[in-house]
Structure formats: C-alpha cells, structure tokens
Length: 231
Image (cartoon, rainbow, N blue to C red; front, top):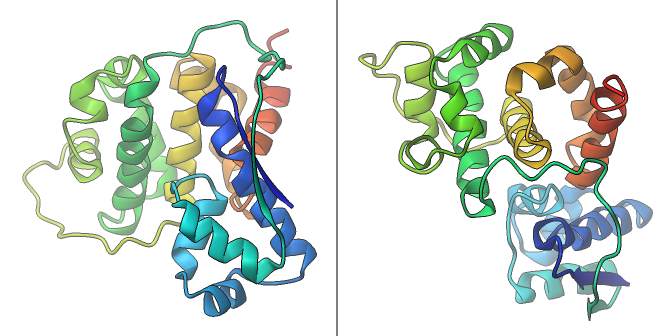
C-alpha cells in the first residue's frame, strides 16, 4: 500500500514519503522505470522526477501508477512527533525553496552540459561567487528572479556569451545542485561548510545509490558525515 502522510509540522518532508514508497514498491516488483512508464502511459522522466521528490504529481497520476503496481493509494492525516537532527531554523522561508533548488540545480546542469565547464571547476566558481551569501539567505533575486542559465553565466562571468538552451534531461549535475541547495536550506549552513565536510566526490559517489531514492535518505547520509564530524 502506498501511504501518503500529510504532516502539519513538516509538510515538505511528508509530501515526499509517498514518492519513496512508490520507488520501493516498484523495485520490489522488479519493475524498471521504463516498464512502469510503458504500462502507465506516464513518461519515464516524470516517473524519475516523482520518485526523486522533484515533481508534484496529481492524484490521478498517483492512482495510475499505483494501479499498475497493484497497490492501493491511501492518504492519512497525522501529526509528526519526529525531531530534526539540528535545532537550527531553515536558512530562509520555504516559500522560496523550490525556486532556489530549481535555479541552482539548472545552473549546475547548464554550466557542465552546455557551457562545457568541468563540474569541479563550476563548484569552485560557485563557492567563490561574490553573491553566494544572498543565495544562502534566499534572496528573491537569485532564487526566483533569474534563471539557472543566467546564474551559471554570472557565476562563470560569461554573461555576454550565447550558448543556447539545454534540453531538459536532469542527470547527476542537476541532482547535485538540487540536493545541496535543499540541504543548505534545511540545515542553515554555508555552502562552503557543506563542501568542506562533504566534498564533491562524495556527491558523485552517492549519485548512483541515492538519486532515485527519497531525498530523506541522502539527507540522513549527509547528516552522518557533516553533523557527525562537527559534534
């Protein structure tokens, strides 16, 4: 059974629990995303985004997926009594979080796959960006006011060069930008602090294991490394 738990204390976290259940059921059924796509009529890229918690599917989409998987969709409303590992408040308002994740993730993807900037170099440029402190605070100009393309070009100081558009096909670079921006918001840390304790190579090695899982699993892994190293 796919159980969707709506939590008044941590709505964003609870909304992704069903997507984790979806991935777990699919794997138990030994069904690939490609097969699930073919049988449900939902494109594979959307299924991947749903399982990663990037997309917000409608109830009809969830119903179609659950029917193909042979499980029932059940919605439960309950309060969460779980405590966060950190007592810090998030870095900025949750209202800007999704836009910030999308902008930063797209900038990573665009810089590497369209501008041909090596990932390691882009991360260095990202950490050296003179307005990074505004991104860390959720400044509306950088979270919602510009695109990922504009951010990537500004970070690399190549605003006047035209590279064209990049076909949407999120891979490792997009995922790294997406997960690190979520973690920065959640734990209210500086990006430099995150990369110091959890280097880029850790993200690269984690991608095959965690990119199709609920982001909560990656957050727990990062907490064990980052927070564990600071206590």
